[in-house]
Image (cartoon, rainbow, N blue to C red; front, side, top):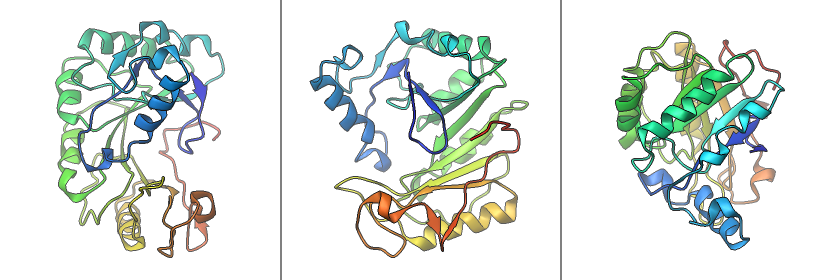
Length: 250
């Protein structure tokens, strides 16, 4: 459990670590690189490297945090990976529900099929935000799968990061928030400005909050440099909107 540098959350909670490649956005996975580094440092939780692993000892971590916080669940893995038993996901959801008086949880997955299989048979705590990654046109079907779920008061969101192509026309009905960001690291692939503007325009037209995280290793001008130098503005303006339901202070 740690405070996070990710701009759209406050803390990370990893009762599950490790994953396997699922789509093109996974090619340069930051979590895989970090997991191997932590394994090399002798971190017990990463003794299996990036092999999917559950950590029952981590389940009570949010309960110990009294300050109301936003948690990104499984930043180092995927809660809905096939290696994670449904009865363990039950335990994760129980903690989320138990702390609904103070915490909010963001659950992001690329495995929307297994997510739907689980969530259609289980209650979803209202303090959960359920999202999927949509990095390229060939995985746009995840949007329809996500919006096929009907829950009162639960935020549904898209993470278009790393954005690897033009997503074209989007039907954002049922989507409450869209995050966009470019890839970072030595092997990062460029994100073109027109792809970003296309998503931003459609969010504006369809009334969906738009959160631009970063350009990443390739800047707005198409030049490769340090991601901090490239920043997180579009034409000099920061666009980091939040769902109206979020009352936090970030």
